[in-house]
Length: 135
Image 1 (tube, one colour):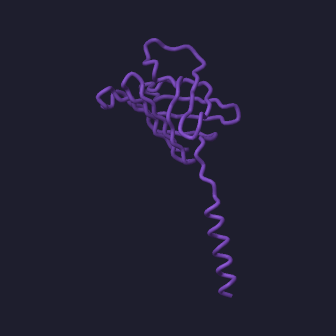
Image 2 (cartoon, rainbow, N blue to C red; image 1 turned 45 degrees about the vertical axis):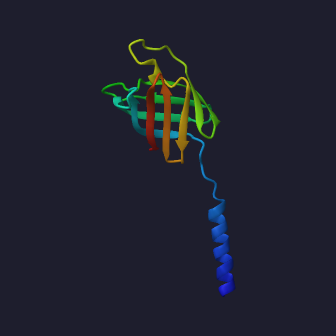
Image 3 (cartoon, rainbow, N blue to C red; image 1 turned 90 degrees about the horizontal axis):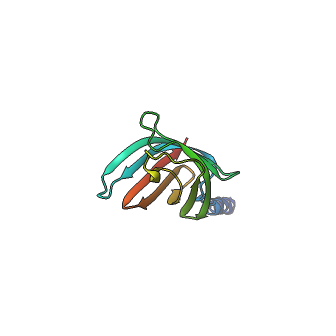
């Protein structure tokens, strides 16, 4: 009996050890906050964000805060460069009244664990950061 329990425990431990960690962003709806920090590290603008990834055709959709429109609502395509970076390409026209860096149209660092999803990038001394969770 003890031998059977040890074997069963061994298989259970092997199953847990073999479970693959998900680190590449996959299809889903994510929500959270977008924050733009100024060059001194102070929060300059912030807004609620809804972020949708479509893995099948590698496209994204961002809807900004409905009150402030921060970040600006837009869409485009993306490529996962490796396990820490994604390249986004905005496919529309830019609004000259919006900080162009609020558009996902460049390389962002990311972390992803199948629930939590963060994107960050520094441009012109300013940090642009999305902190989201899967809905």
